[in-house]
Image (cartoon, rainbow, N blue to C red):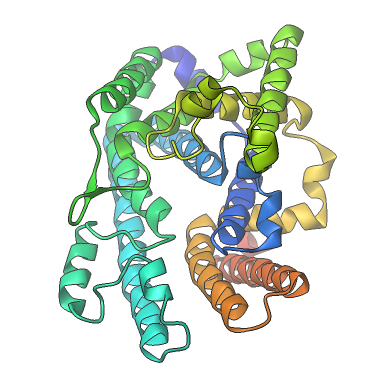
Length: 380
């Protein structure tokens, strides 16, 4: 392990901003998954090229590199790698349980004719005729029901990360270069994971791995981020790019304004190029992260505010909160399509979902503390 990497890992302290970002991503994903909901007009995807998925993947890569990099420093790489693979198993188990219950719930709702059209909307149209076939394909990640795509993506990304971590701890720049090369090759040669019968994953792991490795690279190197924050001109450039991205995105939402966009902008910056992680999307996310970390340092007093503490807690329990959010988004969508889809109802559904996700996060945190010895429980 390189001495500079050891120093950066040893110097790292708890950073609430990581969990705040995961919490924001979880809340955003929840309301983004409820169609025709006024609340999702406020999420990141409506103001620029990147979205909650970018936050999620980058921060998970950053956090896993810190946690397991320190573990490799203290107990060796083999121990760290096995603990990452244990996380892969937990992700897969969570995906399988969520997949089975999720599609069963959707199929039941559709069969009861409460909202029969949702069985096609949620990409499981064959479940009533061939339930076993759909379940088997789901177990091998060959089905992609709506809203499970991000959790599905995290399984191969996390399975790949032990190998990425090995490179990041020894030659971080070389590992990042290899990751970028794989990203470029995947876009050039159209490499992707497939979904039965001939579709592609919503998020291409060959491309999205770069964002996770990039998060790990920033975690283990550390110094480049601190050095860049001293460059005022770079902050101005990042801010200008964010304003440009917001203008383009807002204009796309208005057909009248979109007519003023040059064809080259419409052709190059397609809003649907999420699958292969468009380069301008990566640049937008990096500019956003750069300015956000400059404006909100790790010791910012606002991170102690009670409302933000609730979001942070949802980030600390991100996997459970994400799984709950998938069900809540389906329930919220069902409420809105079977009842009065008023703006007030959309806001109530969104707030109720936030409250439920926060309640789950606090319960899991409280339950975990009860398993600790009394002395440790007092400090937790």
